[in-house]
Image (cartoon, rainbow, N blue to C red; front, top):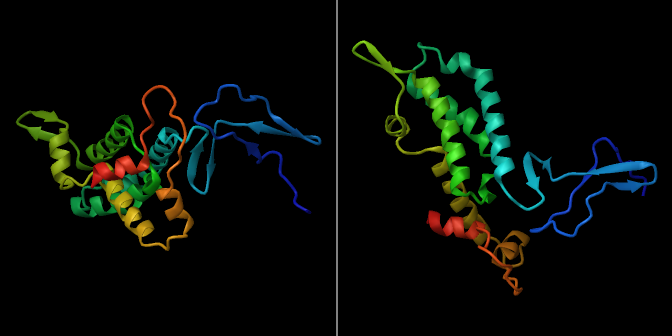
Amino acid sequence: MGLIVNKKKTKHMIVSATQKGQQTHNWKVGDKVLERVSSFKYLGNVIHKEGRIRERVNDGIRVGNRAYAANHHMLKNKIIKRSAKIQIYKTLKTPAVTYGSETWTLTKSDQNLLRIFERKILRKMYRPIREGDIWRIRNNEELNRSINGEDIVTFIKARRIRWLGHVKRMEVGAMPRKMMEVRLVIGRRKGRPRLRWIDNVVADL
């Protein structure tokens, strides 16, 4: 077909809920060896072989830390008002961390990781409080009041609900709507079932 494959950039991955009994070796095509990976980044999102979100959350937090490091001189500047700093944070940091979060299925531990990241950034922006001769860091309740309870997890929940409405308004034959409404009639595996995206959204609502 005339397609030239770059062997350094090309990987392969098998997507499955269980990896038992599957081949683990690399693929060889002619003289090219294509490495098998458990996850890879595509269009800004990390895709995991088992469809899990944890690696994407960790990658988003790394991106957010780099964004903070690039703008820390503004966020720590005493001349800039706190309201302006919050606006800078929401404009630069939040979209970088939550890119593609409309389709995330978050567990409690994933939510905790995101909240810990946000509190760390907010504590650096707001600085410690002086009470008499003692300086102390701001507690979680004070940080939550400073952002009016609109933390990063609440932001993701709002995006998921908005995406739900967007998909529901699509035509019946649209692929995103078909994928959301499809019901597979298959036997269930042993153990606790995986948390689904629609379960998260129903809980959000």
